[in-house]
Image 1: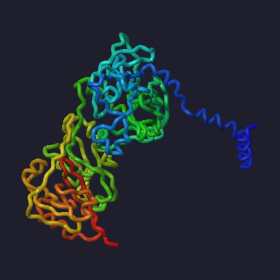
Image 2: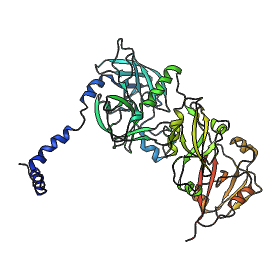
Image 3: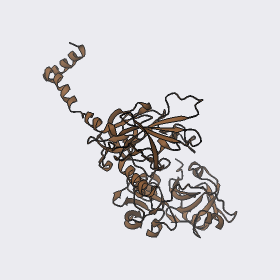
Length: 485
């Protein structure tokens, strides 16, 4: 008898349990694990291998190389797309091919995959399980949700997947992926849901709350389906968290309800529209909790309100803490954009806010977000005098000229501009000359005298919470005066 088994038997015997029972109990525990064979047999025919060919002229793929603005951002570098580069591409190749996955969502040939799998491709083709290769037409894409809708003409009805409900997913549930990692098509991997509602940051799909799993997926799995134990698709495999580009135990999928919403809009309108609230939000950090005398850091802090937006018309103000949106409680600021984005423009929704320690509910009408809008920073410096300063905070301020105010979209009497950084407190907080201060501890600032009045009683150990505007971005920054201890 194997020595390791003998040790188990001996230990169990000492504990008073029958050894034979312990040895026989192991297969019984294994029998309780799910059997995925039925799911694979039913759904594999609806999974396709995607090939996108590039001549170079239209090669705008996002993926293995960092995109604009990412090269100097280690956090953004970790979030690498994977769409399946050829195993050993030749440097002399004039034509390149990227490999990915997809799945048939209707028998008439509509196929869902990731936008980054086919973006900028000159030709897209799909290979079915019966080894037929069909040319695919890109019906439409949405880079923000990273969704692409393809269409093939197979001459007959194709097998299609069943669409599940990603909103019903819970951490700990089993899930299954089928795809083409490194070109090995119809590879099956399994794992569990690690988390739901995962936001990867404002720079990477802020409108998507991802499903996080530990399902092993690699380059080439992108665009493939994620199934639940009922054999229904609950997600589109999209990203991995890795510093190598390969699987390290953390994978992300786009919820199928988000993907199918995009599909329906692409079919009917040719593009995807998203709701817009008209606010800029940030996390409720420790400085805000202290300055606003909050119990905790849940919710989303409003840093700026867009003039003429539904938020402004509803009475939302900078400094408000959004606690709930349309019945959904916000645990963090990142929870808000996906909820707003999925709201149909023109819809009026209730929004619970906290203002000056009191809760109230506002009715906000959601407008339509502009497509492919890129924010441009607008610098500004004030006039030379008069000016005042705060030695404790380490900065001086001066009036904001009308031209700069107009460029920033501010109203008359809003804001003062930082003239100089004179001390370590402001410098360590990252403030710069030219930044515009709009509020100090929730008090609106429009003149240097108002700034002086708001900061005159600052003492060692106290915190001043500033609402700062830089270009088109507004954020709360806390400045704590050292207590000298």
